[in-house]
Amino acid sequence: MRELTLVALPGIPEIVRGAPLAALLREAIVRAGKTLERGDVLVVAQKIVSKAEGRAVRLADVTPSARALELALKVDKDARLVELMLRESREVVRAVPGVLIVEHVLGFVMASAGIDQSNVPHRDDEETALLLPVDPDASARGISAELLKACGVEVGVVINDSFGRAWRNGVTGIAVGVAGIPALVDLRGHPDREGRAMRVTQVAAADEIAAAASLLMGQSDEGCPAVLVRGFPYAARASSVAELIRPRAQDLFR
Image 1 (cartoon, rainbow, N blue to C red):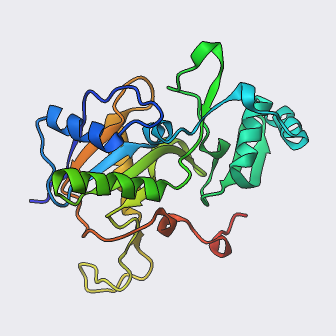
Image 2 (cartoon, helix red, strand yellow; image 1 turned 60 degrees about the horizontal axis):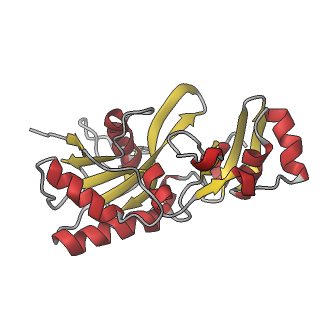
């Protein structure tokens, strides 16, 4: 029997800058009545990683550039948010009313540079926006290393976020940071059940596990930013989310 189990980890508090994420995750695992086992994977919401790493920005501290002011009129967004999106991006890919698609400095082609205001505390009535972690792979490796030190068990870590897709409605969880599991599994050359060698199949394994965990995390007020996954079917290895980013030379749509 092949089996994959996912357990939402309860009781994780509102995260503030400098919060010890690995320790909070370990406590949540205990509350769930679980212990870490080799081969387990923790999926952690990008939002709590960004909060712990101090990636919240007060909009009152942001001065929009001329380019941001121009784009803000076109996309009907707050010019201060647009300025943050430009700072976090290499290139504007599309700009239409209500939507700004960019190539993020991390290589992701995404809406709004991943900048979000939902479930972000606004203090003293001042609006705040949350940016992606500077290096989500490093963030995932750090959590994994801390858990190894505390629990003596090597576990994979995936940092996930909600993305839209170019040809489908709705958002789904994808990986923005990975440690200890393959982000991409290359099955080219493997035989199918008829003995034919597969020629193109590569599995976005980190995205698949990120999406599965998102079913438990939810998208609004569920308050469940971490999920323990057991039964991940691929062998552990060093990895990077960069494996999932299609090289620009192979991008047929830009």
